[in-house]
Image 1 (cartoon, rainbow, N blue to C red):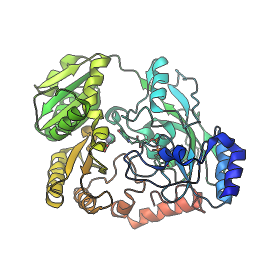
Image 2 (image 1 turned 30 degrees about the vertical axis):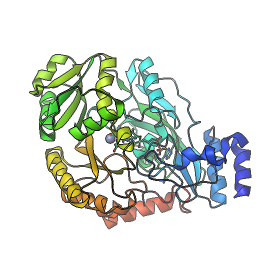
Image 3 (image 1 turned 90 degrees about the vertical axis):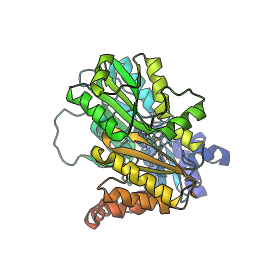
Length: 441
Ligand code: FAD
Ligand code: 2HG
Ligand code: ZN
């Protein structure tokens, strides 16, 4: 490995090959603390051609790599669990000028989501994907995971924003097709192939993304609801009347209590079984359409952010309880309450002392299941919840990806014909298994 490290130092400069244990540490463990490994080195290339040379050097030494952006992924796909070299994209952080006519911009893989959002805002536009990890999550990581997030109901996920991509393939070649006309059916769409591939098919170095109009006025409402069906009904009433709903998030009283306790916040509403945080473009009066009565509304950015804290702080608050089991599942929205009922019953039966925190993107039928209590490596409860979801025709990974955490269940959710195609794609693009070989497949 010393020969390889010398070669990497030649490519990126000695300052950008991190070998000290305490410097490497934060790159070796995931955001939840559940997945930890070790790496001989973290390499931080500053350009696409440096990154390509790093991939070639690792391939020649038969050393696998793990691409890493903000390391906020929640499925154990961004950390070196098998001694891989970590290739950090954070220095690839160039932002191009916004093309206001096309409504597009090119961002380096290492650009954080909040920087991209600010950049779009300064051009009078907005970026269509938002998530609570915005200060750390990177464009490359978000493309690689096809991140969904809080505004999926209005704008879709990363796949829908992606115009073009630049990436380093496993053989060190660089594919680059960033700008393109609105219509272009010239061959396979490599940007879409790499989107959601979790670092297994190529390393994204830049992406060109579409921007969306900035909402003229946004209203955020946090409302008490008896269950998620009531939340879905309220959202549909707004949408049926043409109100552009931008976010529709659901959570329960255990989450509200946990977040208030962790952040020292006062409850904004009297305790209720469930809550709906709904946001739309337009005027506050539209709330009457929902038919809900107990709610707090906010229109200015500061007050809106305060309401969002009750929802967004769920992930960090769960982490304070211990290492969580995390599932990220989805069913058709009319089945959400049935899913919640069955998940609660499963946890009560198998781990009665566990803390269960459910929340998610209700309009998308997407529920985040967090369970703290059972040993982090004991997946029996997770297996049972996955079985519940599959029996309901749902998705076992709605937005976080498969990583290493969900790999065991991929075969339950995809046919052997599909898995064969996945394997053939992987083998064709990365025959020596250099790129994230322990992720996804
Ligand atoms: P990393 O964690 O560094 O990597 C994630 C995966 O992508 C790994 O497999 C890695 O190998 C690969 N990868 C990273 N960069 C590249 C690259 N340049 N080229 C190729 N592969 C690469 N996710 C959602 O979908 N919706 C949410 O609402 C959401 N909210 C979150 C809130 C919190 C508080 C946290 C901690 C996480 C949340 N996430 C959410 C998960 C996470 O933020 C996303 O998966 C995000 O897209 C990861 O970006 P990252 O730069 O941190 O990627
Ligand atoms: C969110 O929606 C994220 O906040 C994180 O996808 C989900 O922590 C989780 O389980
Ligand atoms: Zn989410």
